[in-house]
Length: 374
Image (cartoon, rainbow, N blue to C red):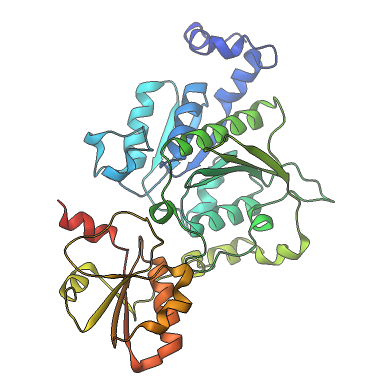
């Protein structure tokens, strides 16, 4: 059946492609894609999937728009600050293409809702920025036998892959746990809040994810199934490595829906420790006290540099050696987001035990800086 004239005019440039045609456009219009996260990766994914004519799109995100989002999340503007990302993104996308059915899930993906949400969609695109969600999404996709279009960025480098697709009964498809079997240790892998990210990079990687999604749905080209593509924005180097399922990692996956729903992914990937963490109000009351050592465990050159109090610099990369020179009995540590300072605090506790009172600034120095510069 020919496409309605308005649809043909909107999508004409891709319909005239010999390998795509009206059949490819019809597949897009009939497809259902769930996008996890409307952040740096989710924004370009959503823009281009909606523009391409994906018929049904779900957006899962419980976060709100902040000023720090705007350099890499172009679906939002200053007027959206404080608003739900899922709802604000849907409103923008509806203006781009009113023919698309868009459902906003203004909620955090969890073991209690993931399987029911995934059941409604054919392809899942992971635009999350934390390990708890990545492992949760991966395990849910394996259980539900859904292809997962993965993307990740940090600093100047990004990755793209398609998991849980392209396997056989004899040789199962690779999934995220075949690449990273277990969550990293505290501070081992920095997130964008800690390491930073060039704003254009999530746009590039997100567009690649959208491209892989369209290829999956229409059957054109060669999708990145059982392969990982890495892109470096500084030198435009791209390399691809083959992935394969590892039978030794199968036991890491939940055996069934009940096991999945009883898995605490936040706990598996958590770094919080309420026994030694303090909030910014308590932190402020401890500053400029000669009996207290305030220590920044970020690496040299990390910004912002807080003003208004004295502190020492002891990067976590050299902390095990440097901490032996700490003479104060009261020590307060901070980093960009609270992960590395918590790791440093545990190193101090292991070395000094109860002879020193050790604290880590929960959430890192950014909330303190924002509070005292506005």
